[in-house]
Length: 231
Ligand code: ADP
Ligand code: ADP
Image (cartoon, rainbow, N blue to C red; front, side, top):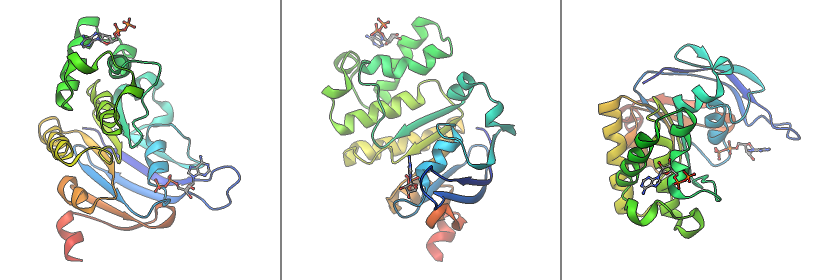
């Protein structure tokens, strides 16, 4: 795992006078899973996207393992931070295998290792490699697309995972399986995970700590599931 520090982060989008995120600070420990919960529009996705530099903060900064993300080489950052989102974010012109292989290839894994890894990741998310590796995303259901999105996020074995409602469209049985896989990644590989969900049961099941957010990602509560449940 890796530590993540958010320091006084603010994000203003152009044309909107209200900040999406305002003065947010948070220390995330190595190997910890932090769940972000809060109403729609409170800035959860914006916060995640700032951590992997999909968007730049208006002010404040982010450190991963004490290194400012603006100083991390972009390819190294892709290797370090896996990202899975609600809408899967798959590239439509690439097959399932090409989507999953993207970051491992980018960081120079040998071809044979990439091929094995694609199969391993498809197995992990419960999709038969023989059936799915050559398919294009438009020929997958929403839940299958999300599963490929999760496979892609995990492919290069990043120490940090950012997950934005990654199981929202997945059927309940598969979701349960993926949640268990995530718990295994926490325990065996000590990933540092920041996970956005609307599902309180999921938050309780997966979180070491839960951050309850209000507008502009103001942190109302940041504590263990046990403490949150008793308050
Ligand atoms: P959440 O993930 O909690 O639903 P978001 O981070 O998506 O919240 O959005 C936070 C706020 O920022 C919302 O008010 C949203 O409308 C606004 N917002 C998000 N993305 C953009 C954008 N690209 N341009 C302008 N405003 C945006
Ligand atoms: P390209 O022609 O651009 O190499 P491919 O579709 O052959 O595209 O492969 C894309 C990626 O998917 C490669 O990194 C490869 O290792 C992987 N891959 C290709 N075929 C398979 C397969 N049968 N099972 C698992 N992974 C595969």
